[in-house]
Length: 620
Ligand SMILES: Nc1ncnc2c1ncn2[C@@H]1O[C@H](COP(=O)(O)OP(=O)(O)OP(=O)(O)O)[C@@H](O)[C@H]1O
Image (tube, rainbow, N blue to C red; front, side, top):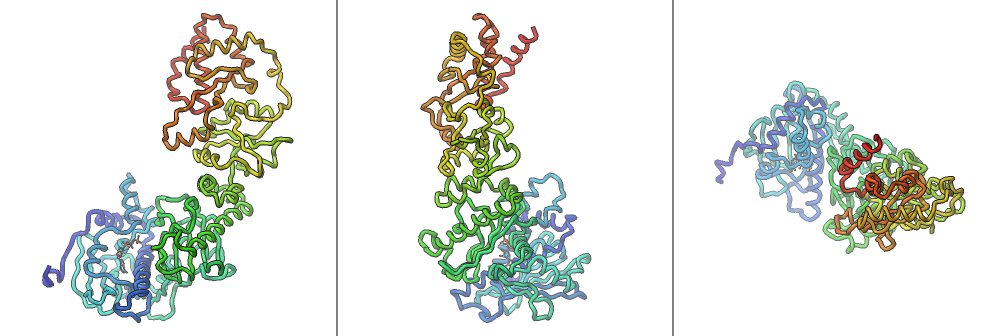
């Protein structure tokens, strides 16, 4: 295109940008002040990129200019101007970046807008970083004048009223960076008040890494200091939490945090946080996993994933090291010894923070466990190096503690005299698992059993075989060692003739045929008429479940049906005549009940017909 016809051009906003603008301008959202946070954050990004460019390139416009942000207001003209000496925008970058939605938060916002049926999106605007366009909540018109750091690029200006179009034209701005002039709406005149601006900077942008000046004063308003570089004693909980909120834009305070400041084996500072919301919370702008990494105060990467093992990906925070080379983001962790040392440090500090939380604030730890416990289980299953430190942090529901959570240590401290095992039971959900027939004899012996109903528990059990040399034993194993019976119940001591046993076994076997591997009687059942157990050669239950969860083909091995010949149902069943119509129905139902309780029934609704037949017989 020739110079003349590019001199000033009017261009339409992209459809989704128009939609976003429309929502922002017409929403009833009242917290308009967030526009300033967004503009400052963009200026800070532009300065960070400038800083990085300057490490290798001195052929830039205004190499000596101070890296900073200046905000001025003009109450008479009702304008606010924000200027930075960042990387700037070329004309084509204006077209590319200010005509479409680039911002991750804005994209997420539009996604939520699409999913939300009601038109009232106003209450979620503040929870997103909606980026540059939020300025149109307070502006009738916006001018963005900019000169790129690239000397050969001419300066230009972008102008829009936030309606259908924007225009770009030549503009003489000799110095590097961007100057945004906001023509405030009548009801946004408050933002011409310098004191109000100072207050907003303190609230939302205190830790921006470049100085922010307001009006003609040369005193910077934000505290700017890298909080993590201060002495631990100097950092108050309030400051640390405030930094977290500005950093993640999370509205909730973190559950806890820790500060790292070490000189050896590698120099490093870090502030590490456990959020109060689970990962990938829809409205959190920091959506990706990873820590923010600085090397010698230069931001290297916003989401650096190699400083923590995969299972600790929910941790948020900042890490800063004087020792790392600035091109670190291009290196792999294996090839860099320093990075490996740093990862080790950050990981052990993080685990330590979790341990301390468990010891010092048990109630908050339960909150933590409910949000992130699964990640620790993943760690136990996958991370050999941290295994020993993670196992004491595990928490469980158990038969004796169905509502509270206990550690393995507590389990051991409460075990029965002489108990040499830690018992567990795998199940589908906490509600049904307590009805399991495998618990009959356990209850009678007053043993506690860990109730493992989370799909991840099976993965965890592949690694967790014992704790302090005491083995974990599945109570549903056919021959699980459950110690000595304390006092057999009256029912258990009732004699059952071999004839009755044989009669029952042959009836069940004839009726169920190849559906079961074997039918046998058991002394381990008290309240329950029957249970299913694995045959001797079957793979362990956790392995079966892991295969199922990974959708790997592993045929569920046929089970052994163990029946309780003393159970009143079976006693009556044994006395039914050989040609009884009811006996086959009862046998099928007892078998399917056992399938159901194991979570193995393929189609429970299928039982309804039979249950009705049994009810009809009962009413006769
Ligand atoms: N002060 C500025 N200096 C240079 N470029 C800017 C400035 N303000 C905005 N931009 C450009 O406009 C783009 C759009 O800004 P917007 O706030 O909508 O999203 P974003 O900042 O890219 O999103 P994110 O915060 O997720 O990186 C930016 O990516 C940047 O390229």
